[in-house]
Length: 201
Image (cartoon, rainbow, N blue to C red; front, side):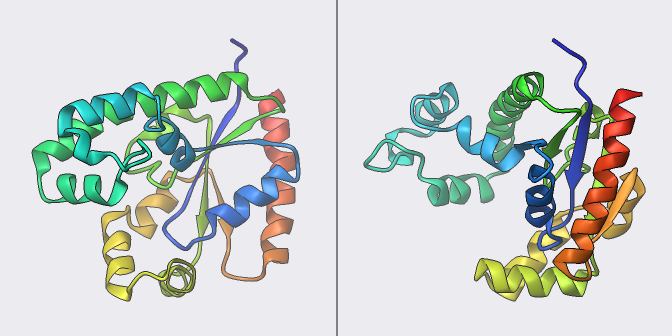
């Protein structure tokens, strides 16, 4: 295993993490997306999905054999023991898969894009932490336009995430995404040069 330089990238809902990671891919940087990994570990045929169906019964599966996510969410949302069980199953599987992808990655560094990087203490997996930031009012507006969720839902998601202050405190670098995409792209270009240099140091 070569010693890969890992850059953790995070930000609150609606802050623009996807826009930032898309800009990094233009520099041929591998993006390891925690949300995608979380889907992979419960895909059809995975040990994660098998464990979930053994625990909750076959009702937790849809007719095509895939996971019934809304039903699972309902079951764990209303039962803290089930939530703990699920987290104990999935977190190690997700971490293991992320480490495998980090080891496979090419390029001067790779990006670990994790919405709850700070909350789940995954900063320990990273050499450098980048936070995509914008004012909370802007987060709310963007998330409302994108998700089609209610304002109440978005606000409760924001409340469950680390505060803006806590996130910024964990950051080695901040991408300010309160302006245009061009403004963000300029910052990503500059940060890419910096991270490439850091990874070679």
